[in-house]
Image 1 (tube, one colour):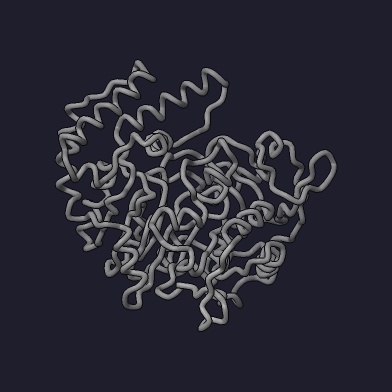
Image 2 (image 1 turned 90 degrees about the horizontal axis):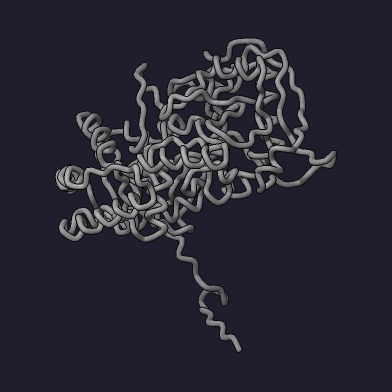
Length: 443
């Protein structure tokens, strides 16, 4: 027997507690490197709070403001707005030396940083060493590695999942207890990797120093975000790292990152109720790139791929690796939208296609000669799909000086509308260059 409690004053429906400030979210909709930092920078100019919710210093966001280029790895790229508070949430894994180096460099500009005391788990130097050792081990055993950034992201999240990791709140509490747990964790990894050398005493001395340096930045993240959402009107912006196809659950596993880079990671990585999520913007490059190993159906291992790589300066901000390049794939955009429910897209780097006589767009996949209505979960299957393309004429003119919709060539407008119509998501911004002013706002 079930009992249903109703409130007569609400017509028998349970009242929704959806009051408060809405959180705007910016997420990657491909394999990363779409230009999220530029969109965040654009929105950050009017934001009061800017947050990172997942990932670590494997992220690399580039922003150009007033001709100066900024690269961010752990800090939200929206931090350039010195009036806003930047928050690093509990879903982020934090390499303290890297964070302090970034913070020290940037705090001179008056930027304000707050860290959730529930973050990360803390990434130690031996996590980074283990990341490299695991890649060597995979290569030796399977003849192939994942192609990680070797920044220690996977091993750190593994420590979190196995409940052996150490968080910011542990570092700031009883240092004797922290030291014991640190030693135990180091010993566990040394047992698994006999060649791993850990200077336990040296690292603990540094960590004790780091604890005092970060102490003024640390807040209880759950209470901070609750007050921000339920207090006076504020604009809250969340910057996702990585992208949908790198999500640990929904991405091209195992060639993915170790966190949830889709919209669910915003809630768990900051302690935000789903009802307070507002607009969710997906960032999409006008073509497709990915770094490292893994299936890539629209990849062009030819002069087209080389042209996109050269014109787009497709080199990873974090790793310096050349990105693999190919045509825009609408199958993965539809898939990313299913998971994230995008309000609108930002389409970046349209100008890279300016010289193309003809542009192809992947619209569907076939497997064994039959069209498949889904994005394959199995990577062996994804490797075998045949992409069906639509061909569109190139516009063969420079779009980099365009600042409004009417300035764009008609064929470029057709390309944009084609993407909108096939994915069912409106495009709110179109990027035609590196600078902030190169983002054309459509509505």
